[in-house]
Image (tube, rainbow, N blue to C red; front, side, top):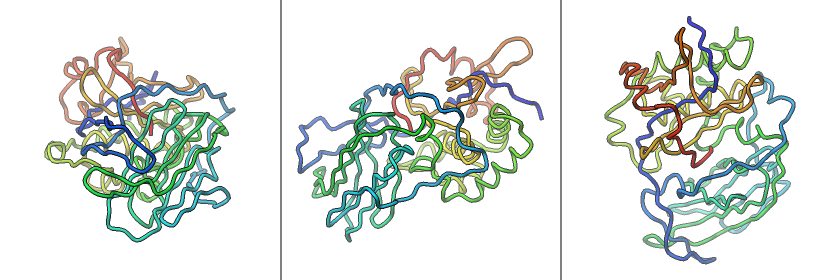
Length: 328
């Protein structure tokens, strides 16, 4: 297999999901207006906190899983917010009361950007502290009627990450490799002979491009709130661009490679891509391969669907039209 050389390693993909709207009505302590199709939060640009580099990310064979430790928690009659492990880059929420209402969690970090998530009753859900060091507020909401939500639990806390990789190694709602044993096993098999991070990125990227087929019908019919199930994507070998990005992120994280699932815009089109950390380059934000003459930017969705390098170049350009919005 040809060894891909990545100089930065990014997965630039179309995400055929609805663009999100943020509530425009004034929010108070008791209610939160909600706009249908709100999936990925508002459109305020997130600026990363400057965090000191750690010596190295987690070891490849050390799969890091979140746990609700219970040492720091806010518990009400309806929900529990566990913030025991904020140094490891995550917070967990469980809506414990019986309900058939729609449930939401909002996480606001030091950039003041609010991430809004759907959750299910009775299960722990993990949310990354993607904004780096600083002050956060987590709130849990239960639908009252229409677009009105009642705040059933809130907790503020300060975060000092153990290292900058912490939020981007563990599974979360958008990259749920914790419940994807086949994905973990496949990543381990693909990377077993790799000598460094760049090789791991290369073999995983190559696998995704060669084995996944873009699902045009799914792209047309996907509903608001869709989340990839990684083992289903792996088994079916089909998916939309969100599936491509989430699968690759899950594979790399399970092998100890820090990886950010990024959502933003390429021009006016909504996209998802990944940023990967390597010891040689640090955090890198573009997918480029060497064709023997020049560096060419890659888009795996176009590559896997066989649309060719001309369309890839037209679609992706030189990368200057990419605008990062959210990190997961």
